[in-house]
Length: 203
Image 1 (cartoon, rainbow, N blue to C red):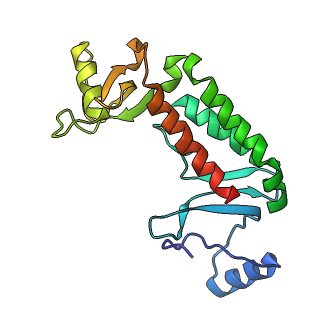
Image 2 (tube, one colour):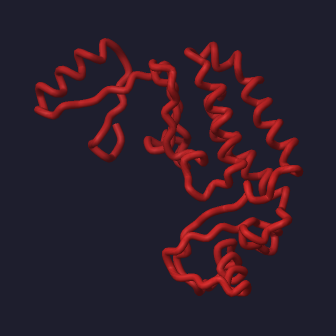
Image 3 (cartoon, rainbow, N blue to C red):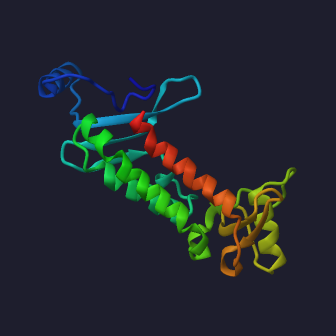
């Protein structure tokens, strides 16, 4: 059971009887999601993170929380790859099905890696809200703020900016509207990270 008291995870059937018992004991109406399978992504201590998971509901739809496809700063190209992998996973009704479709899911990942060099650079933009205008260390956000200000774009904390990583080793970035080049190795790493999240279900 997670730290918050707004939900709990239960294994076993019939869930309807458990639901009825909980409501009778607490006086609180509950809602139930029933999964064919579910995967909790690991935390640093080896346990499963209750706010980072994905699974197939018995309705055939996927429920996804806390992964890169749900984060606002994930580039559209990476987001689309992971979403497409989840669409493949949605066809699996059982663990046996998951093992069967793993090659198909991996093909999606490889296709996005192969096509990265030809992608529209705008699809690689990272969107984040500016937390401040002065930074004590060099990072992507600090470079993005400087790049926007050099182009005469006024910024204030709380504003959202879009930028593309041109050289991750030097944290050189370009504002989204003028970006023309990108660090392929950096974005291949993001694709790999998104794939590893989804591929955890195959372990």
